[in-house]
Image (cartoon, rainbow, N blue to C red):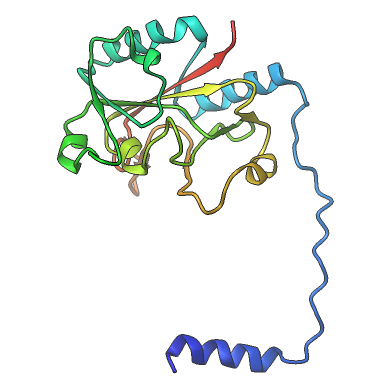
Amino acid sequence: MSSRDEILARVRAATAGAPDAPEPVRDYRASHSPDDPAALLDLLHHNLADYRAHVHRAVDDELPALIARLLAARGAASVAVPPGLPAEWLAATEAERRHDTAGRPLTAYELDATDAVVTTCALAVAETGTLVLDATEGQGRRALTLVPDLHICVVRAPEQVVASLPRALPRLDPARPLTWISGPSATSDIELDRVEGVHGPRTLDVVLLTTG
């Protein structure tokens, strides 16, 4: 018997015959925001910016030019492309496209030498200014969004915007590798000196995309 099995056996023995725990009461508010897509988008914009993300708004036909401008403004000469990212999103950029595929994933050295990555997301949470990625189409594996210094994330509004975490969790698959992003990567030492880009992108650009 392993130590784990022994501990679990002791727990089961100690709780044998105990009454069943009552079902928790879940009558709390699921959201503190108005049920208004425009208001939620404004709240998301505000909280993303509060976390030091750079927030932009665009309609569909403006997106390729905007992404090209952002890559050029950050000096990005190369961009990682996850599987399923719409090809037209990068149609206007002159940056070298480095496709990450299941058959030919970018190596750690290739990712380290790549300036930027462009993805979409699974959801964006307005009340916390949080982006959630689940490694599905258009997002790629987790390393793709942690190694390059610049992450441009496109959020489709209103369908990918939710008010709160209680509203987000039922729409997410807990079996997926979820990455929760609130602003660019940052940390601080005991002196509270903030350092960005330590364990993720130094710069986070978020595009709130609506249908024109």
